[in-house]
Image (cartoon, rainbow, N blue to C red):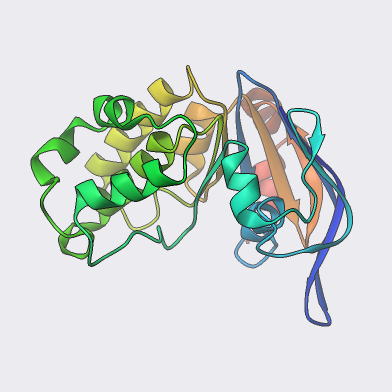
Length: 227
């Protein structure tokens, strides 16, 4: 469904990604692991052309989307939830979902609220008044509302209480039955529980790719993620 081929990217004169290649198939949750500052979030931003690649290709459903406008990429069916969630803090929960409908060819608000029923009691509250966990749920629900065919989530469990993180894991597990997910995550247990395949990034390049079992057997966590 999504192919990233030999992507290089920079912030100004500082190179960040060095020939990253990865793929997500239609029935997969794929996770990207790595220490802070190695380029994990930049991979997602490059797919969305929030950071323009200096070389390489990004294809979605067989179509080239490299350096396409970000709004055009979103309309093709990629839902992106950034690390800061990027909700509209002064709009109500309902209006946040309506904003996703405006930009969608196939809005799915009812489906989003089925996945996130806790939002039903919060529809009239402003986004900025929600707890961190509620804001994260809203951000993902907004991507579902947009009718996304692929979800990309950047550090969705960051800062969440353990009980909320467990709830999020269960929701993502259900969501993944319908929508493939590309997940950047620091929480190793969440990654192992959800992912079919894992990429470990070291200094802007892929150092490991394999299943959770292969990661454990190769001791890739100890080799690439431990200080």
